Amino acid sequence: AQTVTQSQPEMSVQEAETVTLSCTYDTSESDYYLFWYKQPPSRQMILVIRQEAYKQQNATENRFSVNFQKAAKSFSLKISDSQLGDAAMYFCAYRTLGWGKLQFGAGTQVVVTP
Amino acid sequence: SAVISQKPSRDICQRGTSLTIQCQVDSQVTMMFWYRQQPGQSLTLIATANQGSEATYESGFVIDKFPISRPNLTFSTLTVSNMSPEDSSIYLCSAHHGGDNEQFFGPGTRLTVL
Image (tube, rainbow over all chains, first blue to last red; front, side):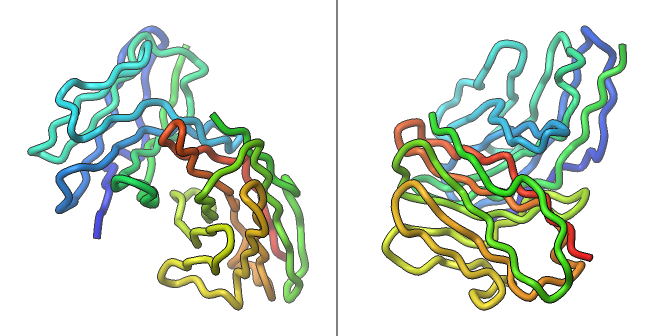
């Protein structure tokens, strides 16, 4: 069974600074998807970024980028130029190819200070 | 993309009663999912709902407690039966949108059982 581990319950960052959230996972599959979701106090789950395991290039979406290390089964999220609106719970998630279910990590609470 | 709505957004219920949560998607989707998020916790998959077949439940969840309907490709309901305070959680509906190959989430239903 796949497991997703987020070892940082909370991370604090100042506005305009950079913060990196860590995520590791365990799988025997060779192809799969990895995701970072953001959940603000509104409860709405928002997809931040997605990485396909067969792609060696790290995904980037504006201020958000990932460091995908397939051999190490590591998938970290970097938030650059942090903004107050980035404050939220961030979940790392794994999914097999096709219609597979999402397996979530425990989450990391990001606090942004002015 | 897909826009998902849920009703009710929140409810306070008495022990022993049942609540049905509705999930509406603005486009046809094959796979719909129901998740539970207990206070301060991550998301846990309850079941996968396919149109025209019975829902597939995850370990620890049973149909008698969480009956699910999926009458068409845009709608699903989750019933929380014979509720106890331990059922107090956020319940989220999700849909797999094949065109985008990603899962979209509804805004969640916050349930409090007294």
